[in-house]
Image (cartoon, rainbow, N blue to C red; front, side):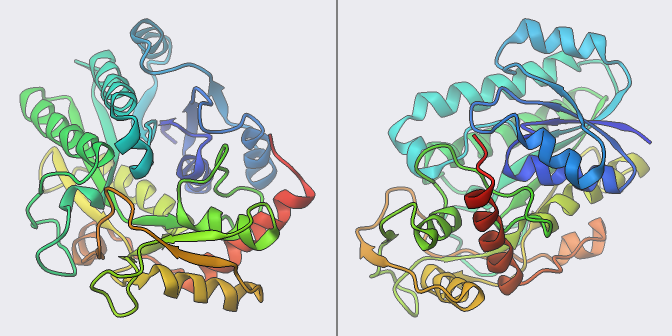
Length: 342
C-alpha cells in the first residue's frame, strides 16, 4: 500500500493516526522534531502494531532538510500534516512562536512537493468558525476573525492551501476541521502526553485525579451556558485518527468536490466542561478536585459541529462516546504512573 508521511507523528493525534494507517494497510513515515512529544512513543506504536515506523527527526521549519527529505523519498504519495504549535492560551502569550512554527513548516513542505502529485490532509480546527452564529456549525458557516493566534494560523493555512490547490495542479487537499480530541488508544499504550503543564482539559483532569496536580481550574463559570462553563464537541482520538485515513482514501480515489475541500470532524454533540468532569468522575470512580477560575483569553463560549458532510462524503462517523473517551484517558494515565515515559 501507499507510503504516507505523517508530520508530528509522535504527538497525540499523530501517533494514533500512524496506528490507524498501519491497520488500514498503509506504510506510515514520521517526521517530528520532538518539541512536544517523546521518542519512546515509537516503541509504544511498535507494541500495538508489531512494526516500528520509519522515523526522521528534524524541524520542518528547516527548509534545506525538508527539501532533502522529499528528494530522498520519492515514493511518498500522501501527507497528513499535524506538525504545529497548538495551544490556544499559549498562542495568546507567544504569538510569534505560533506564526513562525505553523507557517514555515507548512510552506516549506508545500514548496518541497511543488510539481509532484501529492494527496495532502491538513490538521485544521473548529477555531476557524470563531463564535458560531448558529449551532451545530456546518462547513458552510463563515470563517470569522480568529479569537487567538493559534486559530488565525489555522485560518490562514486553509487559505494558503485553497490558493495553492487552485494555482498548481498537483496538490489534492482536504482540511479536517476537528473539534476537541480526547481519550487514548484502547491498549492504553499511547495517549496524550503533554510536556510540562497540560494545555488541554483532559490531561489536566487525569493528572489531577492521579495526584500529579493539586487541583483543576475551570476557566470561567459565568458564561451563557446551562451550567456557566464552556461547551465543546469532544471527539475520541481514535475516531479522529480514522477520519484522516478516510480523507486519504477519498483523495486517492478522487474527491468529486475538487482538489480542495473541508470537513468537520466531531461527534455533533456538545458537552460543557463541567459535564466532561462529571463524565470523568463517573468513568473513573474518582472525585476530582476542581475550582472555578477566571475566563481565559481566546476561548469560544460554545461550539459543536454538524458532521453530515463527513458522514455522507468521507464515509466516516464517530463511534466512541464520552464514556469511552474518559475511561480510555484514565487507563492511559494509570499506565503512565506505572510505566513513565520521558
